[in-house]
Image 1 (cartoon, one colour):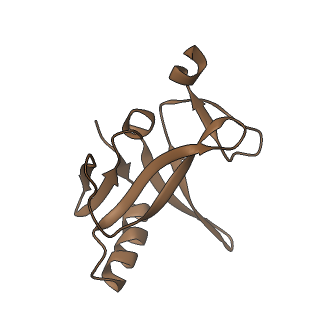
Image 2: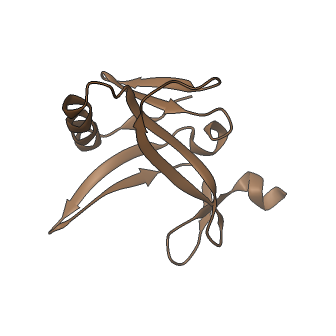
Length: 113
């Protein structure tokens, strides 16, 4: 089990962590949303919740709630810049389909349900 960060994502998150010493790391998970079912939730973690699984990505901690873990396990989080645009990109091996607008995704478990 793992959630990993690219070098550029790690550098971007490290900038947030360095700016606010109260932050513990990155909180990453999913919630029901959009037309396909699941959308990513990304925020800075200020505390560890019961049931969180914590991954260390070269000194940056990633907090994932237990309910989200099956849908994000194996994900690599990247941060890309294209011209004036910047965004986090998720390379998630569990994604079986995405909606047309790119807001949400499904997994094979969703298809079987």
